[in-house]
Amino acid sequence: MAKYTRIEVVLQMKENGIVPVFYNADLEVCKQVLKACYDGGLRTFEFTNRGDYAHEVFGELNKFAKAELDGMMMGVGSVLDAGTSSLYIQLGADFIVSPVVNAEMAKACNRRKVAWMPGCGSVSEISYAEELGAEVVKIFPGAQVGGPAFVKGVKGPLPWASIMPTGGVSPTEENLKEWFAAGVHCVGIGSKLFIKNAEGAFDYAAISSKIKEALQLVKTLRS
Image 1: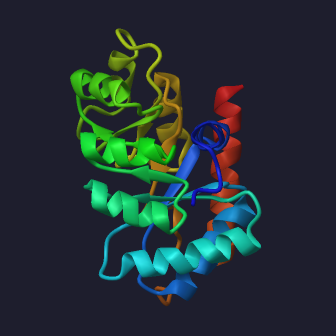
Image 2: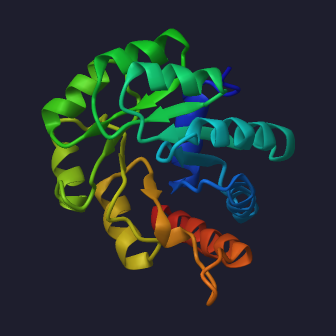
């Protein structure tokens, strides 16, 4: 079962300001990337439900996180239906992220008091997601639905909305400044966080370093 409450997850996402989004079929690679994120200071991690047997990789990765990385909150993204939500909740997911708004998913997560973050692309979808119990909504794809200007526009009629854009977010000062100035709760970042070396393998030390730098940027932008 989930180790952390919905509110703990939501507050941690806000505190860090960045949620890493990652998938790899190799469990050992996932463990090293997760540890690099943890060493960099992140305390939430979104594992993408993408390949065959992804749930088996997540199950083992979550056991590793709970045993070795105290305070790391483990979520799963790209979840599209209630059945898959329930599967990952059974594997101990602390939060579920989706590119869509699905009422049955909301029910599955709410029954187990697991944070649910659906993908929205309009004020109507955001309002409906909140009606279904979403504390944080994901805007996806972030850049294509209107970028920081969209977030700023939404915050006019819905100033209480907690928004997490994913897609079109980079760990640079220029990009992060625009998103946080618009009023995001946090941002989801994928491949741009996960640096590779000349041979094409993940550079775990560089990933930790990039994350530390990005977290400091967020802190500075908010101060």
